[in-house]
Length: 78
Image (cartoon, rainbow, N blue to C red):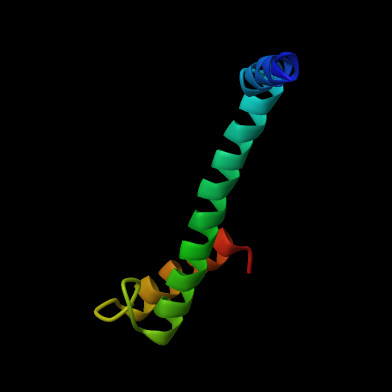
């Protein structure tokens, strides 16, 4: 039984230090950051269109509003 536990511990250690796992964890981190940014951009676009929230276009000229909303649409893929 102790022999099996030792083997499992060795395998776990090898797996945790493997290049593949490190690459997958890094990709996962990058995807998480990208997805969070995309969600923030969508909410920002909605706020700009509705004129509310942190991305409100209140105080902007019509041209500034149009440019800002156009840029947000590009970022969210609309």
